[in-house]
Length: 541
Image (cartoon, rainbow, N blue to C red):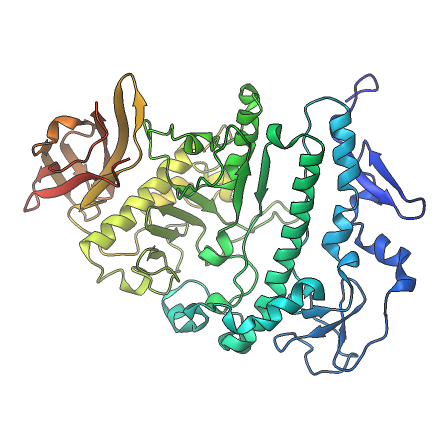
């Protein structure tokens, strides 16, 4: 700030009257708004306004479109007023030159050329409204998908009977969302909007090539959320189901990020800020809660201090009222934890009356079988151990990210209610209580890191007691022909009271990257037979 300093952030726009690109130093009102409306107003003489048979008027563009059966005004008079934009779905009368995505990219070539010409490090943020409601797509991208719509895949989760054991409910007016053919018509629009964005991203990458910038530019393509598209009887976002919570994450930087490399570790957009600073040599300025994804790209993550291959998300839509009160928490899960094949959805209030959720994503990819919830009191020891494990990971994540304001530990962050989110989640237990639980019956070690002449990797075993009383752990040891490859630290034995857990860090260190054939952890304890946990490697890397 200050008149003697140049503002680093600028905003690019376009003046249709003069045909010139504009760069503003401040987000003034005239350029903070979308270019969509000014574009349509300037070219209105080229556009058709009158409605034809069956058409409705898009409340965003004010121009006609042909609705599909899921559209809220399908078959109704054009005089019927639309209720929001979610169920405006169909084929646009506007050509590809007058869509939201097209109007948004008009300033990009000029902005990129200006940034490159200045000879300084630069960052260009390009945001698209699509794919987003209203799901009205131009025919250039819509028509070919419409012709192939019978081949589109509709998940079995559009059948909503499984929601009887879920904290989520189906859309209250969503009867048509149960019809695969009707859902496919919606998918046509949604996928056409995606393909349009893909087309313009291609244009921008080609421009990078033309400007000689491709090989020294970090390109990140991502989004803020997904779309239910009728799965679980739902629309838009606002759940932790895979369709809503998963988003694309594509990184490109020739010479530093290998082309075609696929990382199957769950990650978060929270890590993008740190990733940008890392790859641009500015990590010293990183004060975010994220961590650079470079550790996964280059295979340098060893899990040395905690399990770093877990994804977390929090959902809390409350905003303070005029008196500063947040009100009550929603009766839907507030925390998500994804580790390996499992996903836990849990409330951050111990006593709230709602179902928690545990999915095995490998066996149940469409998330239709909640292993806890109504099944919590009859679930197997293995299921309960996994639920306790992921809950412990959530508690540890909140502790690491509590910050100076004690967001997760201070009850003041929840209007003074309860014990603080960490204590609330720790105390929450909607499944059967056990005298002893363990997180895994087998632990597969991930990719090791070659360090000081050895391949090294860490994994973690969790154990605890949820039943009232005390558990006495006499010993924890590794046995087997390959036991010499492993070291244990952390909890080595002692008492665990009801409601508590302990963590054992397992180090695998070898001068060769071969297979582990014979190694197991044996836990000797006071509640019956010893617990045995097999140790191995996911693959011979």
